[in-house]
Amino acid sequence: MRTLVAAISLFGALCCASVLIYARGGTSDAYHSSHSANSAEHAANVASPKIACGNGSKGVFYGIAGHLEHHGAYGMSDYALQISQLRDLGVTMYAQDVSSEQSAHMVADFARAAAKQCVGVLALVTPFEPEKRANEQETFERGYALGKTAGRVLKGLVTYYQVGNEYDNWTILGSDRSGEHPQDYDNAKFMKARGSILGLIKGIRETNPDAKILLTSFSWLHYGFTDMLYAGTQPDGTRGHPIPHWDITAWHWYSNMGSITAAGDKKVNVLERLRDSYGKPIWITEYGVRPTHADPAGYLVGKDALKGFVSLAKTYNIQNVTLYELYDDQRYGGDGNYGVIQDDGKTRKSRFDTVRDFIKANPMP
Image 1 (tube, one colour):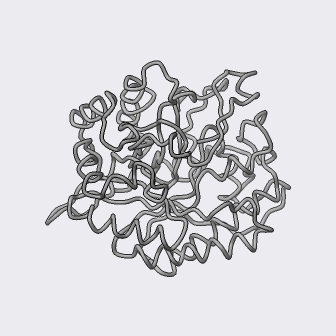
Image 2 (cartoon, rainbow, N blue to C red; image 1 turned 120 degrees about the vertical axis):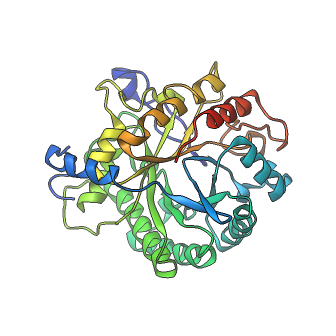
């Protein structure tokens, strides 16, 4: 969601009026049923991840995003206050941006304090504006440098690293493309994105071999991008390109996208597609409700968000769902007022209590 512009897709307007573009073998433009059964079985057999909590452990299913490096309300509220709000909400993971050595140290300081209160951190490692770099080699080098820094600074503090954020949105050719197919993406931009992803993974794993890698998060029906990464292909149809290896597939889903199991005119089950195509656990590293929604609290605990994710978690091996976000940030130049707390960092919206009560009533592994 950071620095992303929302747009209703022409494709969606023609087909279902609900699409948006935000915040390995075989052709990459195909769904392979022969691969599906083995992938589903593998994904289902992965144990639920845990974080240390005193002498025991806690699950990581419920999380929320924040932006320490953006300051605003996050700068006004000290770490102790934010941790207390996270604990009261009932979440155990706090997603945070890492785009420089400075922000890596900031996140490390927070993680040290949060660990004492049984709260873990998901690092969203994203270089600054990779789309503006000259070519794939440059994005690889910049990604590699940032990945090394993040892995080194956060080693022993952070286990989970998402490499990049919503690279699909600056590589897709236009709002009339669904994102399902390789030809929906700009070839040169895709190569830049791939370079960044490969560099980030290499850097993180060199300095923190125990890290778990979440592939850069995509959204809507943009698995055409992921298919190419998985198969070593690219939009121009060429094959044999470097393949990034990731541990967890990350996805984003928002209120104007409708149902994640019946998306768009084709009623695509996106969760099934992700599970069966890549055979990885799934983390929803952003779910949220648009600020103009008539019933934000109701949506967040309803069938297209928390209620649905909880009921589908075992079937599709959903290990984490991360709400976007803790504080409103429109006043400070952020994405908008998506928070469960207002931009003073203190005043709770009614949705805070609604989400808290849902989490309390629906404990997850």
